[in-house]
Image 1 (cartoon, helix red, strand yellow):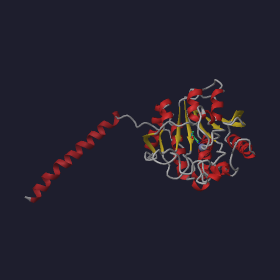
Image 2 (tube, protein in one colour):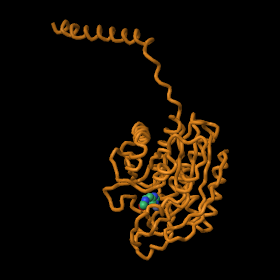
Image 3 (tube, protein in one colour):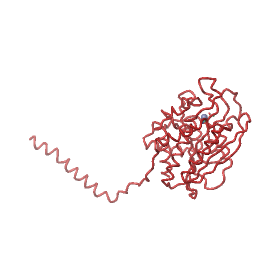
Image 4 (tube, helix red, strand yellow):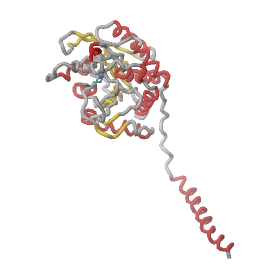
Length: 331
Ligand code: AHN
Ligand code: ZN
């Protein structure tokens, strides 16, 4: 009785399994082959860290300084070593107080013959004033800008190194903007048009863009290297390039970084992407550490003397770099 019961219980299961495997076998020829995803190269954490340190070792890369010129030369040769054409766009702009600043935008064009192209950009200058420092006496001190400046550039130098060995279907323009961070110090009275005192390099680049193979879209990296990163769907990016934002955030989520690339919205920021969108008409998003639940909204050491190498995280840099590579090699 007990035995018959057991057999009776097993039989449908065995039959069911046979039918199921049979179905599987029959269905196989008509099932489309899985989509072949091109293999995507990844960043090296050590290399990323070394690229940040190499920049901060010059000291603050502030306008009209020796460090600025030395770092510009180094960035140029670093990109040239990746086997591509590099040009340096020299220009002059007026600071908020009408002081004349010399600037150097550094432009590397990978696979210039390709018509479908992407723009990857970051600012390489550092802020001349630690005007958010807890010590007001530091307000005149220039900062290292390890996160605010060097982090985004480090990711792009690593992408450049990888582009030397791996060829995506699209061409890539890497543009390192100068004079992003010379905006008015926070203790000065606010005036209309102050936003134009920021992002002088991207304004110049966008206004002097030669017609060629224009990038289809752009990604700006800013403050992408601290511990506990938080990237949100920033409103200027969502206004000009919502599809790009969703595309990049989807790639990040697929890679398991949905907790870092959050689907929350933020207010509109003034950053280089605003001018690239407005003046160059290239839909461009900003991957920027922004958490509107805390103080300034930016990372804790923003515009302070503590924005230095001590607070740089190799794993954050690698996460951002790998997401950028998944976009570049997914196009
Ligand atoms: C302003 O604070 C106006 N914009 C933030 C953009 C920025 C500053 N990125 C780096 N430093
Ligand atoms: Zn800044």
